[in-house]
Length: 108
Length: 244
Image (cartoon, rainbow over all chains, first blue to last red; front, side):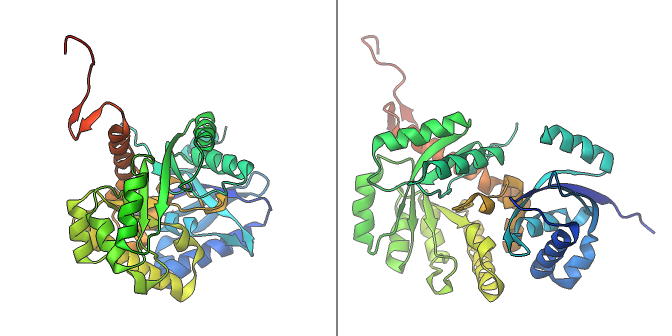
């Protein structure tokens, strides 16, 4: 069986308030489902890798074929639990280590 | 060469200097190199200079833009005659068929925008695109309504944007994607804006051009025309003096 290639997305949550990872992931799944339906969501293979509530940084994993789709879904998020928010993609990479390096460079 | 991105429709509250500065800073932070803010036709010169200075502070290029919403084609022509030499970008919101036709064929119009949330006012059809392709107008698509609308309203909007974008591509009318944002949380990074255009079937190359090459080309062309050295398209004054 062919190995699935993955992409890791480093995200920054732009919001004055904080919320937990469950609330955030629920907003992400909602956005993907609203835009692409259950079929699209199943192709995305979304998984939360890391969530830093204090720094508002998130690492998400997705399939490499659905990066643009996930980017669009993340960009369409305007609220998490009725609190206004924007989610920005800081970096995309094929490994967590390379992503962390890129994010450190961009975040400092 | 690294792409330069532009957002030609950032709408801060011009009466609130702090809000204006915050929006400009955000645009710069998100990775745009050029931004345009629609200003009232009667905006004093000093206010315009202040906007330029604030943009300079955040290392972002500022282009002046005026939005016209004429009721008749004659009103549009009159406004264009009055304003073309004063602003770098002229956008026309087409709310009737006659205005849409006039705006599409007039070479003084840079951006054609259509009230996307109202499908009955989707005047960008093949005839419109044909006229625009012979003039200089670009189709402007704002992402704000895509982010704020929900449910059936967003579905209708996506459907009309898909039709308009396909028509524009068929007739080689450049597309410009802008944020139309009135607060910072409605602004997106250039790559995110490009990803959002996949929702109305714009391919990646065209999407990136819609936020970089196409808006940059409008501003470059108009700055050249507004320069005192401009004589005619392709002809400009190089030097003045006795030996010329």
